[in-house]
Length: 365
Image (cartoon, rainbow, N blue to C red):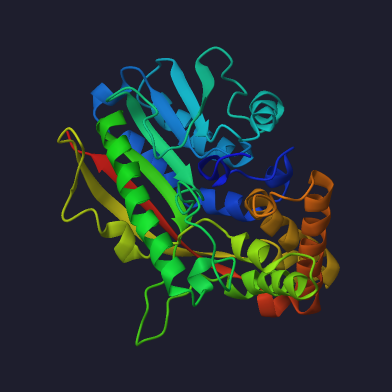
């Protein structure tokens, strides 16, 4: 079996994730100006051998616009050759990434065959990836909520932050704190002085007046949760399998993002990171406008179910280790088809407005 560490964050393969990631693509756009500013404001030393890290690249389509923005910003500073390094877990769909970079009409390589050099690293971004002080900038979008490994089963909901399993909640929260610290420690070493990592990620709203915070897609997630419970009730999956079908993530609040910066984060060698920008924002449902125009609830439901399956199928599949591959496929087909039917029953009731945060973290000179 693939390790929990490798599965946590791997997307559905054969290009499926890319084809169903309009939401993540919309999120990435939010951080482009921050990325341009980060490169423009870095010192000349960070431009000597320009290297841009794409942390959590998945299958590449949603990296094209950010890498184009980074190349454009670097070109305004220097004519030096640029290295673009895409990173993700060893089990990532690298074949689809290579196809996108080489053949997509929107590839950042168009017009840059001789001066931009793409490469990949198959390793978790919670570990060391680059030599010290070599990164001109780093980028991460829709990735930092993924935990380095699954903290284990959850009794009553695939999304732990909608659970009442307080023991599981604390396990996931604790792993998130460790992972965020590890991510910052690695980047503090790898960024050149004055270079930045720019990120866009999902945001858990702060609790207010005793009411728990929300992240905007609870109703959509609930359609899948109801489908999982129905499968358990029907005996399609066991109670043990149900509890193991988890989304191994933690959606941080603004306070949780800020926590290591008090007022600055100190890396393992004394390097200093400053949280320059942290902006909460929202992202509209990318599929709702088409539904409003067409009234086609089935098409809307297929898009949302595909979106959910794109990032959850690999993690859910690991909850079925004693099933054959055809059995796993049949079970997950049925679960996501049931979620699709529930979405189609009332699209407006489940349509999300996502909460996001865009941030920039700069290594001090």
